[in-house]
Image (cartoon, rainbow, N blue to C red; front, side, top):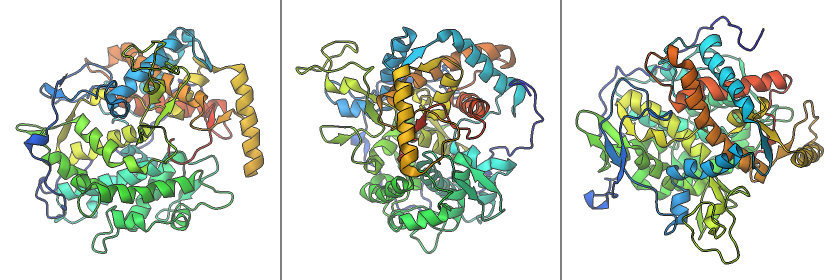
Length: 531
């Protein structure tokens, strides 16, 4: 069967959350959140957002009014705050992308003559082969929800149906956010050998979908809850009690079925307990991720007249500030402030010994912060994922979703390598293959389909991720242009492109190139906290 051959469309679960319950209530009895700061704590707003036609804008029949968004911090005054901001991701990745357009990367040769092939491949997946009919408005945004529907069963809708009517929509939303947060944080690449056999139906699932099913079954069993009266929650006490042994058993990790980076995942979830406890203004006195709903509903910048609208930077601040302690201490830091998923990159401006803060990106007088490339992939993946239940259950809309970027992970990035747009340079191929051989010796792994391997902090991986963000933006524009006759005046959002096109395309072309392992063209030695 050719790449663009039409397949029979399997039955699938529509990502629909049942909202036939009680209306959302800020004063839900299940909330333990403190009141938010008063109007005096409001951030100055000076960035405009409204209905956008950019690939990242929300495609919705509801047009949001134009509102102001806070700008990122000035990097000359607060470089750490700037690099932790959402706006910095696309701005800084553009520097690497510009170099890619000049074929001037450190580790990759770039052949943009192959880019139309990527556009055709992804457009064909969306249009010809797959699950959604033109004008493709039914494509959901990229989010964790879809992974729970593996095998055509909407497990989230079923979960909601098991809760009594006394559980109002606000508490339902809290519970789903609890689940999605822990599930996303667990989903940093499962490794090549791991699979999960469902305790409910006996079927075997792998990769992201396997982790989704496993995390859901752990959630339903109350593994993450410290509240004996409600096992359907994640809280600081439940997370604090987690051990490597408990997660190993629950995820069925064992010799021959190892999950990569499980120790790192366990440590991250235990650190999450401390983060939730430290920010009760975000997560309530019981330390639940889902209590961020109450913070957003009560935030002074939230508009609740005809539509409930939250500026996306408000949610971003909760995720970045509230979850900052979960990242390993080894992560890049400026002035003692951990930057999370941000890394030094040789393709960025490099500081000199007498570096001063420079407002010019390509200045030879670069400051130290300018050499750092931010991604915040897991945090963006969280934002994409938890906005869905808030929108579906609480009719909460987010202004500024165009600030979110494509996710720089190995499926999206692998798409551009397997199609020939990015080609790893010879010296790096040799180094990566040596790394792979060393890893096989250390772990006893038998190589089936050999590929270069690097740690997440390696400059190859950082540059690859940076150019992936920029290429995904370009891909969104070109795919929309290609599909324009079918879109009936709509535009695919970047989140929809990730869901139905690039992420799926990266996985499928990996299966074509490496049918035995289905791995990406470059392997990452996962620590369980990045991919």
